[in-house]
Length: 420
Image 1 (cartoon, rainbow, N blue to C red):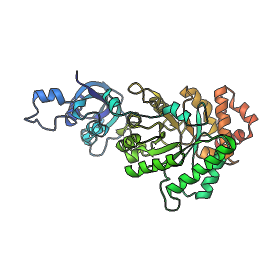
Image 2 (cartoon, rainbow, N blue to C red):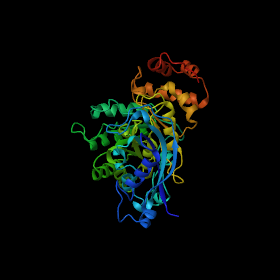
Image 3 (tube, rainbow, N blue to C red):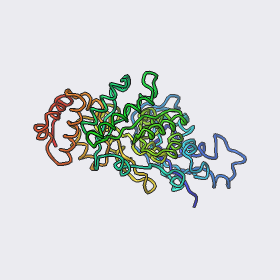
Image 4 (cartoon, rainbow, N blue to C red):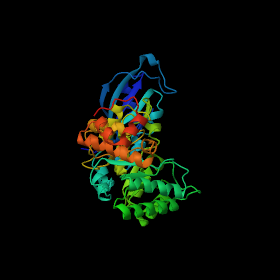
């Protein structure tokens, strides 16, 4: 039995769905828009993609893509599964993507088409080692013993000089935060070069560790051209850093995989640009696919967004994203879901109840730095809220005991119901 990759699509069209699905399978494997003399029955049996399931689903109600053909009032929509012979492209993510997500988005008969899932054979496990650290490996490199891990992002995102950044990192570390990361907008600017940022941050963390015994993990944004990215990782490692961050969509899966093979630190995988691929209900690649390929390529932490986030995505979609990252892939590939985007202390109870797990990294940028008492007070407020959630203590009760939490709730959700 030949090994296959099963790709699942949501397709909307005015054409016969079965015929269109067959055309997509042909276009993305051995066929094209006309019959070919050398596309023999033997060749097709070995190399043609095969439509294995068509399930009609409710119409989306959205307009068709530009250039789509037909009368949209006659549209039909279906979830379509297509098996692609692995032999066509091998266990290679770039060539896989050319097959399952190549020209098909340009087919005019498809008024909507999204790649929503991939079922990968074990051949990919032999080729890609995946996350090197995951949850357990991350904890081993921290002074924290259990989750959820509470973290923040350097804010303002860009513009801080060495003194300001050193002061901020010191304040956060002394307040007991577990994790700090560069914003994805921080690169290697002339006003504050990357090498200097590494020196300032690791120096501040070392001093606090000497004072308190607590040293947060700091994820330095090493995103760059691939050779420069590896050099950035090596610089972080040399200075005693414990984590690096990569904007996965900016560098691509191949560059992430290249780094993974040369990396000795946990890789914090940022999902910036995901909206360009996943936001539209009419075209693109679902987060479910992104996170699988990011894990295969070596990301230890993967951003999912959090409940009531400031970006797109319903709570149900966010919970599905968190669950997707937590679901074993090819028998393993464990990664840490990273909840972020507009997270504040009052979300702790609901998040913990709905996710049902504490192996999470919860990041709050403005939700910590925007606290009226400052960043350290913001850390204490987040910690108090999450401790209350884990202990089953009502948020209002804990807020009466922790002034920083009370102030945070007044600041961020003045009209919210504070229920446990």
